[in-house]
Image (tube, rainbow, N blue to C red; front, side, top):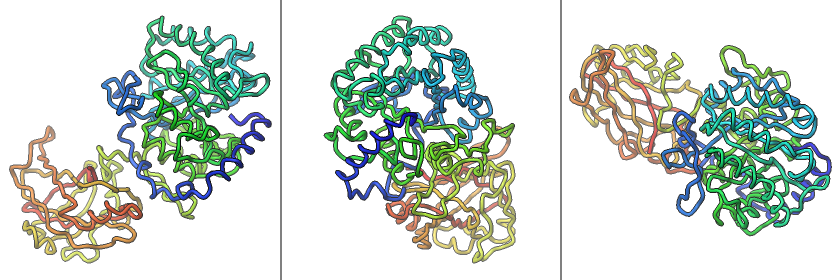
Length: 558
C-alpha cells in the first residue's frame, strides 16, 4: 500500500470530507479502557486447534469459523513487498510472531508490479518458503496476489494469476493453513476500475474463474477478494457476491485516514461499508490495516486504531497489520536498525520494535497497552488468554509476589519452585487459620512489584491451583487492586479441604480454589467499572494446615 502519489491526494481529500462529516465523535479519540473488545484473545486459535477454516452463518452474520463450527479470529501481520524486503521470510521471525506475539496468521505480500512477480518471478520462491515457515510455526498463511498499480486486476501485467494460484494449490493441495487473497487493492489508477458497482463487476469477473479453478481441484481453502477504492468497498460485493460459500471480502484501512462510523449508510466511509456488508450477508476480513496515514507516514494514531480494532474484534473480523517490516516509516513494526531475524531466542525485544510494533503486538495477544493519552505506555505483556491464566510463574520468578508490608506473619519463605509460587513455613509460623472470617491472622502476600496489569471488566471468578505434597486444608481471601479501587475488605476466605485434592503424575496433589465477586467486594467493584477495570496488584491472605503449599495459574475468568 501507499505507493502512489495520486492515491495519497485522493485519500487526503476523502479524509477531509469524512472527518468534517463525523466530528465530534468521542469514540474516535477515547482511550483503550473505553472499549470492551481490546483485551483477551480467546478466539485466536492456531491451525493445529482451529483446523480448516469455513464461513458460517452465526446469528445472521457470515462469520469465520474453525473446523468445529465455532467462531475463530485471525490476528497477525502482513509483510511488506517481498521483492524489497525478502529477509522477513525466516524461521526465527515467524516463530517470534507465532509464540511471543501470539499471532495465528501471516500475510505474504507478493507484489506483482513495482519490480515484483511480473518482472521478477523468483519472488515466488519467497512465498513458498514463507508458506513452509508458517506451517512449521502453526500459522495460517495468506498468499496475497498484491495488485495495486495499475488498479485493474485484468490488466495484462496480472495475466499470470491463474497460473500462479494453480501452481501453489498443486504444491499445497487443500492445505488447512493456506488462505488465498486474489487481488489486493483494485483502484482507479492507470486505467483502473471505477468506485461503483461497475468496478466491482470487473473485479468479480476476474476473481470468479480463479475461485472456480481452486474449487474444481478440490481446494476448500478460504478465499479473500478485494474490492474497489483500494479494498474499502465490501458493500459492493455484498450486493453482488461471488457464488462461493467460502469466500470473504477484504477491507483495508489506516487509522489516521479512515474514521470510524456507527452507521451502515455512508458509502464514503470504510467502516460503514463493512457494516453494510455484514448486514447484507457477506463476510469481511481486514487483510491490511495500519496505524498511520494511508501513506505510511505520520502518527501512529493509536486511539483511532483502538476504535477500529474494538469494532473488528466485537464482530469477529480477522485482521493483519501492515507491516512486519523495518522500513523507516511509522507503519512499520520493526525499527530501521532491527534485524528481520530475531536470533536464537526468537524474540524481538521491546527496544527493537517501533511504537506501532509494540502496540500491535499487544493488540494481537490481547494485553493492555496505553494509547497516546498516557505518556508512559505500559509494556506489552505476553499473551493474555482468560482460559489459560495470568500469574503462571513460568518465567522462574515470583512475578511480583512477596510478603506484604502489613502482614502479621513475615517469616514464611516465598519462592518460585517448579514454575509455581511456593510458600514454606505456613503452619510453623501460625498462618493456619482456616475460618471464613479470621483471615487477618494469616500471612498476607501482595504482588506490589509485579509492574503489569490485566483488564477484568465483566469477569466474575478468580481461580488458582493449590499444589501440596499431600492433601491438606487451605483458606484464601483476595483483594484485587486498581488505580482507584485500592481496598475493600474481603467478605470471607474461601476454604478447600483434603477431599478436594487429586493425585498428580509427579506425586503431588492439586485442587482448584474459586473466589467469586461476592467473596471479594473489591473484585466486584473493579470488574464493574468500565473506566478503571485494570488490576495492577493482588493481595492474598493464605492459611493452611500444612507447612508447604504452592500456588499456580492465578487467573480471572467469566
